[in-house]
Image (tube, rainbow, N blue to C red):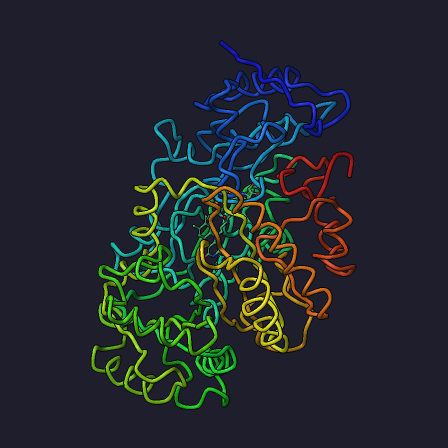
Length: 544
Ligand code: FAD
C-alpha cells in the first residue's frame, strides 16, 4: 500500500500547485522508465526516518518528504532528477548520506529523499563501490560510502587517504559537500582538497565526470557546495603509504595564549615553527571545563583512558588554579607500516615536543595505538553512548571558522565567558574543539567559505554538545545565540562551518558575502536551475 503522508501545515510546499500525489506519480513514471532495481517508499516509517537527523533526533513533520527513493545506480538518480526538472512543478530532491547533519540539511520537505546507502545495498547495480588502484594510488569510492570503509579498503593495499574527519561513519558525499576537517587538515588540507575526480548527477539529471581539468567549474562548485549543484555518486581520492601505528599525545595548558602559540608552531611549515614544525601528523586542541567526565570523554577513546583517577585529581587541582578552564593540545605522530618513519624517529620527536612545548609541566600524557584505533577513535565513544541511550539525543552543535587575530578575544569571551558564566554549559555538554589550519591548503575555487582575512592561519571552534537533560536544548541554543551576539559585538568576523541560516538573505549577506554569493548563484542557475537539490539547506527555493 502507498501510505500517503500528509504535509504538515507549516511545511513550505515546493510550489503552490504541487502535491505529494503529483510527486509520487512522477516517481512511479521514473521507475517504469528505468530497467534497474530502484525502489520507492511513501510509508510513514520511511518518511519519518528521512525527516530527522543527528541534530534533532526527532521526526520533524515540517521536514517530511513525500517519498524516499532507493536508487540502484547513478542512472536511477539521473532519471529522478530529470523527472523533477521536466515536471510543471519541480519537486525538491535531497541526497541523504547518513543524516549526520544537525539542522535538517539532508531533508526534502514535501519532496523526495534519496537514500544514498541503497547504491551499495543488495539491489545495487554496481559490483564494487570501493576500488583501489595500487599503481596510481587512488581509491574510487561511491558517494554513499562511509569513510571507515574507505580506510579499510585502502589499508588492504598498504595505502590510506591523508585527510580525515574525527568521526569515520560519515559518507564521502556528505563530507565533500561541506569540507571534511580534522587534525590532518593543517598539512594536507580538508578532504575537499584531496579529490582527483568526481562523478556528479547535476540538478538537470546530467551525469558528468569532472575534475580540475575537465568541467572544473562543476568540480569546484560541488566541493563544499552543500549539496546545491549535484549529487556525488563517486569520488576518486588520492592515497599515500599507510603507517601502522600512532603515538597519541595530550598536553594540558592553563591558558589559550600558550596553547594557540604552540599549535601554530606545530602547523607551520616555514620559519615560525622552528624545531617543532612538521613533527606532528595531526594537531587539534580542546577546551576542558568538565573535569567529572574527563575520564570517559566520548570523543576520542583510546583503548584505555588517557587519565587515571590520580591524574584526574591532579587535573582538577590544576583547573582550579587556572580559574576553571584548561586547554588540551592533542597531537599524533604516525610511524611504521609503509611509512618512512620509524619508532625511533617518533621517540625522538616526542622527546622534542615534551621539551619544547609550553604546556603545564607534569601534564603530558602519551599512548601508543594502532593507526586504525587512532583514526577510528570516536567509534568506541559512540558505542559507549549508544549503550547508555545517549547517542540519539538532540545535538545543538555550533561550528565556526575564526581569523587567527581574534582567537584570544574569542577564548576570553566565549570559553571563559558565555560557556562558563551562563550555567556551566560545557559541563553537561560534549567536546569543545579549537585548532588552527593553514589557508593555503584550501582551494579558493571551491564553494567552501573561510573568514575574510589576510592571515595564513585561521581557527576552527566546534562546540559539540549533547542535550541530555530537560532544559539543556533551550539553554544550549540560547548560548549559541549568545556566542553569535558576542562575536558581532566584539567585531569578530567568524564564518559558520556546517552552516545554517534560515533565510536566503542571511546566507547571501552573512555567510557568502557579495562576491562569493554571485558565484554561488551563478553556479546554481547553471547546474540546478529549478532549485531542486538539497532544499533542506534553506538557501534556495523555486523559482530561483
Ligand atoms: P548528510 O547529513 O546526510 O548530508 C549532508 C548534506 O550533504 C545534505 O545537504 C545532503 O543533501 C548533502 N549530501 C549528502 N550526500 C550527498 C552526495 N552524495 N552528493 C551531494 N550532496 C550530498 N565534519 C567534519 O568536517 N569533521 C569532523 O570531524 C566531523 N565530525 C563529526 C562527528 C559526528 C559524531 C557527527 C555526527 C558529524 C561530524 N561532522 C564532522 C559533520 C559531518 O561532516 C556532516 O554531518 C556531514 O553532513 C556528513 O554527514 P552525512 O554523510 O551523514 O551527510
